[in-house]
Image (cartoon, rainbow, N blue to C red; front, side, top):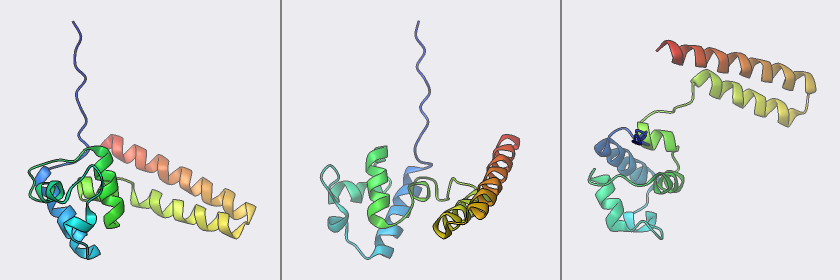
Length: 125
């Protein structure tokens, strides 16, 4: 007997995803027809926005890219990355652009600490 693996959804709520997509599309100033692409018609986008359909992960990614929001925000209404980790990544990027080896090493150590703290916090929650 083979047990089916439970599926991890790539969204929180179909209606909420639709509302976020609609808001992002409006903020970007594009129509459903302009947002459409091969494999995702304007009619399908309309159904997503009404909460009647949930797009595949690939379509969700493309919709997020085309509307200028993150996949995480479209799917969950929030960023999935910890804010401290995100800030530390920005510091690492800036240090690498500057090219100072000591600053780069310091930034990576800070990123490591932030990631460890975020992991501990997520386990406790």
